Length: 547
Image (cartoon, rainbow, N blue to C red; front, side):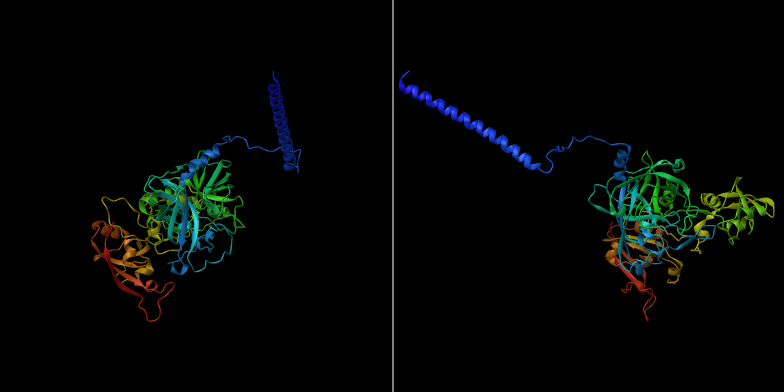
């Protein structure tokens, strides 16, 4: 090996050694620097071990499954309420709207306080005279868009909007019918696609201690689910002052599942996901849930719903008697009976009078089955189809006597007693029709006695609602207008209006003859016509029919 080769080899080894030394230095420096930074990053708690997020594991249970199953069927309802001065025959609503309560008597009984002091207890102030919104909950019971909710959610509504889960669009809702006695209502939306309905359960099977799940939109928080148990069944409010007294149709399921403002109209379901009630009210001293909530049983809901979709209202039987709401047992025992209902008065010309019943008779049985009290009597009579006979066993002066009585429609029997029956008129039911029917875009109703006095022949229909962007709105029809004729055809009922609409084709001329009172003459919010103004004025409004 020559000198040059030896020198080159030594130089290569030196460079290799230097590179190795440099690499080791860099590695050691990196490790030291990392440890220093790690020590600095955990200088507050150097002996603590950092946490890590574990892999997600499905922990669903039966309640999780129920919540997911119910979500598509529970809807949020927003209602625009017209200014109070614009509402006709204003009926104070529930306290969920900050309104005072009215007094509602029982059918066949004396006056009783309205129990629906929903959320705020006593003394809530009147609403301000301006439009405002309220919200509630409902649930789909038919794939074609039929929804059950509370009457107090939608009453006095100028506009109803319904929001479905996962659908950004809001749908216009219309009232199919309401029942003030049970505080239930049926509304409908046209979503253009089949909707997912709930499963209805049998509330007679509900027992104290059963699981109860409430679903709704409290405080406008959509799809809120709360859990509790059934605290009581058949609960009246008689003993719960200051909430008043419930009538025979208001026997609730009590639950401690949290129910708050906005839950009204939502479903109460059992562990199988079946609807066993409609969340209606709570007992509260602070406006929120205190674990005492009430739901209208599903069996009553079914009965009311079926009547509404058939007739537009609930038809209840009556025999035309009044009786005290409370009869002391010792009073009956002193008269020689241990159960029954004493008649206070008999409606002149009513079924009871025609059947031979008198005041002070004590009804002890119907069709051979004993009557426990007034609620029992009311329930059984009202559930008897109109026109069906009943055999009433009566104690008269210590003698048992049987009388045949045929039930009559309660609303017809007491049509002149608004203190006994709530005058709820059926809006258009929206029954399917063939072809492309003409749609006026109005909801007509029968005239009140006051409105009949505004017409020369006491005939016509009142417009309860005018739909937005409809034919009716286009030609200038307004709520509270009284329609007496369409194309010179007299109309005296909602059916007459529908018949005229069905006889027309899109493009046909339509002329409405309307009586318009001072309240609709451009002076909104007045309770009477200005001096010198006529009480009503005849107007003709015309346009071209459309589908």
